[in-house]
Amino acid sequence: MALKLITIDDEKYVRDFLIEEINKNFQNIIDVRGQAASIKDGLALINRIKPDIVLLDIELEDGVSFDILKRLEKIDFEIIFITGFDNKAIQAIKLGALDYLLKPIDEEELEEALNKAISNRKEKKRNSTQESTEVASQFYNTEKKEHIVLKTSDTVHLVKLDRLMYCKSEGNYTTFYLDGQSSILISRPLKYAVELLPELNFVRCQQSYIINTKYVTKFLKSGTIILQDKIEIPVSGRNKESILKLVMSKMK
Image (cartoon, rainbow, N blue to C red):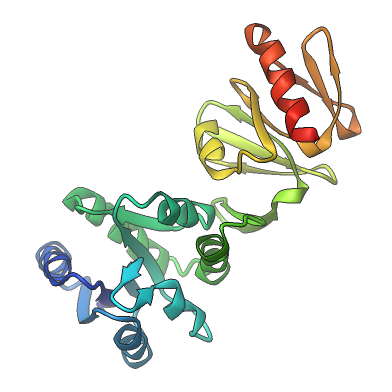
């Protein structure tokens, strides 16, 4: 049976493009069941169709799409957000580890995002959209980050930033170390963590490390930062003094 999809976007030409591409490339796989341009119509459409996949623009003609999601008792469909080059929207989406497409929409990126959504539905993976959108919505509306969402192959982790001590990368993998000696490994490079974490408390002190200054206990002249639980973090030699000043300024 074909998966039910709806698109909610306040620009008709975008909706027309999406529907045309889906009908061309996903015939008998995805059934486009409707479209809407506003929060009111989008909410009614979701409740009526009960879709498997929703293509959802962040900015709608009568508000932001997070307002739709807040009014739903349960989010049991895959969401692919659509946005322009809005740094705030992109940061919010990344915090929730959600899928998104940038306008103008690239055909290959659309196909890739839809294939991922289809795979998630077929494999009946636990839908994590509820907590993910709550994190994204919180930041988008308040600009205050309290949590991030980290996804592994089989688990969705809602991580409180206060608990994150440091990150360490090895190639395309990054481990997030939490207080209490627990850790989460994700298949993303350290650059992803840099974009995800707020500059207020987090410092990249070496090519492979990001630390939470809240957990710094001392700085050795040899070029090592000591965190709580006697964890040693190396600092790049040439950046030693500037890193120390940055860490100390954030600890005040």
